[in-house]
Length: 271
Figure (cartoon, one colour):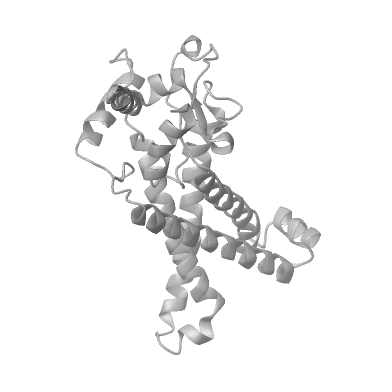
């Protein structure tokens, strides 16, 4: 069995397309060596979904903030450079459609994986996550010498994933209400428009803070991955990184390969 096939089985069964791996802080010398083997953590579908989400999110932040604060000098200059508020608004709405497409793509992907027989969803929170979170905090405070034994996803990656799912659904829904107020008011009262504008604005600010202060640190600014982790581009993680950051997943892969090897050997011995 090839390394890519064995590790991609777990990649396909997961639902973390929107939660690209965030690396825990580990000793630099522990990951300095370049091991021969790599593991596929995110397949091509998951990487495309993440790219669409990241591209649309950054574009929406760049075009949305000037529309929200048009009175600032810097935003007036920015809007003028792009051709005026109408052009910026069109770009913003197109990027919103890209984000919506990423969400639809992800749902279709999950349904396809389910129909293929993948029933395990390792991105879901479970009873062990609280204990792993406490152990992680102990590690950062110097009260624990070793990283927690995370599986496929750690608690930060799970929060990133569900935060992204919630944020995309909320932003797309409120964005459509703001985009088509005449149609919405045929069914709902006018205060729904006002509420949608407020929710859209504050969710955008909250998402921006979460991405730039937390997610960007773990995948870009953290000294162990600076200037950035390449997992979101290549989908691959080295064997040493797997052992340190996702030891339980690594052990599951090794055990599955051992069992498959034994089964193959027994079939060869059978006359």
